[in-house]
Image (tube, rainbow, N blue to C red):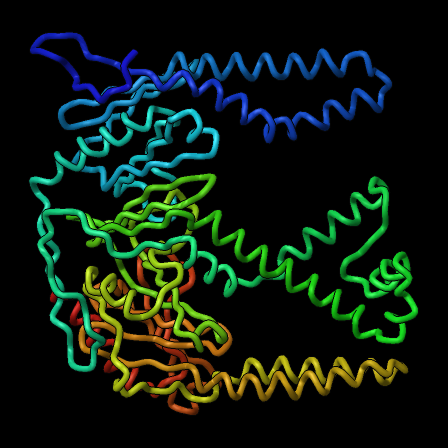
Amino acid sequence: MSDAVLSVSDSVGAEPNWQRLHPATLALAIVKLGPRSLNFLPAVAALGFTGNWVWIVPAILAFILISLAFAWMNWLRFRFLVGDDEVVIESGIFSRQHRTIPFDRIQDVGIEQGLVARALGIAKVGFETGAGGAGKENEANLDAISLDAAQALRTTIRAHRGGAAAPVAAAAPSAGDAPAAAPIAEHEDRLLFEMGPRRLLVAGLFNFSLAALAVVGAAMQFFDDLLPFEFNMFDPGDWIDLAGQYGLDQWVIAHRWIAGLGALVSLLLIGFVSGIATMAFANWGFRLMREPRSLRRTRGLTTRTDVAIPVRRVQAAILVTGWFRHRFGWHQLRLQSLASDGGKEKDHEVVPFARLDEIDPVLGEIAIPRPGEEVDWQHSHRIVALGGFVGAVGVTLGGLAAVSFGQPLGWLGPVAGVLIGLGSLFGARFHLWVDLGDRVAIRRGLWKPKTTLLPHASVQSADLKTDFILRPLGLATLVFGVPGGSSLASHEIPAIPRTVAEELRTRILAAKTRG
């Protein structure tokens, strides 16, 4: 059986040339038995509790054989056909499903390879269509075909749609915009951004995370009775006991800061190692290419993904950084798009870790340049800090209640309340926005600053919201309805003068009408 992409017929009147998935699909089914066996564990446990130990091994063997039999039947009953202008898929063991996907409806062909799939030279292919909607699964998948066949299929579909492809004209930058990339011919693929091992290492260091501490701590508790030794790297007392084995316990006790330093170094080491590992596994070999109609992103160490974001379906650009990494000029770029990414992420991460001068060319390709440094940002009213003040009052009252019951630590409540209140008041300074004529820029956040670049044409609705607090102050919150991606987390400009909000809403909706 050849894995090459074949047409419906080699000649007029010939029988359709149906194809099957790669036989390695059965190998993948064996790999998937591990996670699926978790659903079978309660039945095995029930046999043990009832004393029927003799049936456990036969039950496990029966589960494996039945699972493999169903996998083989699924493979046998699944076939697909690549025609001149459509893909046809037939599947189902007992009830057959016939699915036809015209090339014109396919936005792109996504290719994904897990660790086992890469070893076998196969790939999972997903067809991205407009019918799937953002954040939903692809309309159809081919779980396992050869990598060459997957790439040939993508080339076939791109060639079919390439005749109608038109270059996306970049919008002329407005006054005050950051410099955009110069227009380049769209007939060839171009590299926009890539990340090598050195960049991944730096990104991992800035991706410091203590989330792994919970995993390490749980593992140490779980395996505590199985290990031949007892040592908690986070406990200074264990460091003192370790020093005692080398006759240094008295010296360490006299210098207790050494034990504390050892525990602190362990915390930092795990945080940095987990950050580097997370970044490396997710973004190894990261490449962002500009194609005639889309941005193509490939990345991943164990699971290699290849997805495309059609340029015309991008709704907004989101720049994210952190309080510390911002001091060194590092940012992340995400795109909110109508295109799905298999439901794995709400927004497409197209630049995980870069400086602004590396991000500007990508923004230029989607015609959403960021505002320049001289832009006059507008502030939201400081009433936005009210929520933080309410929380501060709650913490303070809770601490005072604890003190009244004789708990001295309750005094931490008022101290924390004061800090929360001051932090909320200071954070209100970072609710900024500016209208740039054809798009709105919204900036907010102190610890994790985020700037959203929202074209007027992407806004489907603009709602004015007010309440008993904002209304007497003549304020309103402007909420934008934008389809795709992170639409569940709506974009808004909080607590601005109501007249200003009404004028901005009128301009945006007028731009949408003209579009």
